[in-house]
Length: 163
Image 1 (cartoon, helix red, strand yellow):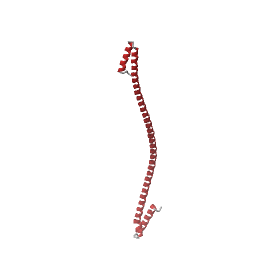
Image 2: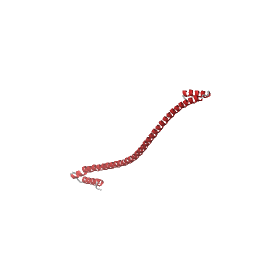
Image 3: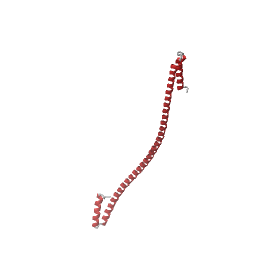
Image 4: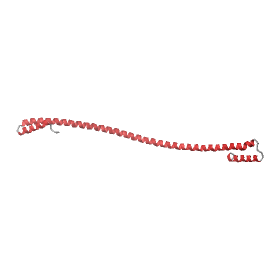
């Protein structure tokens, strides 16, 4: 604390009175100086207490905010952990479904090749019917031509359906 201008002037008067031997005057002036200094000190103490109270309140606010931030961090970490678990489960499901799709594609290709094979056999049977069986049925062939058609029918039957 720095003495005010008035207190400084009073201090000089106290020193002068003491040097002149005026003890009562010096004591009275000294009392006034001490009263002024006490008031100034009390004002400084009030300001310091206000600053300390403000700092305490700010500290409490910071502690509260820190606690809230720590709770939010814990929640966020939990959410990340839960998301990782969900991601792992989803990845497994995707893998399972991908294998299922691959198996279905394989079955589809297999079925398509079987359909193609049966279409080829059907076409062959139709050709045999047109080229060999129909002429025999209508009896339009004679002699060696009949034997040739029967041989063709036998070979076609053995090759395709009479195994």
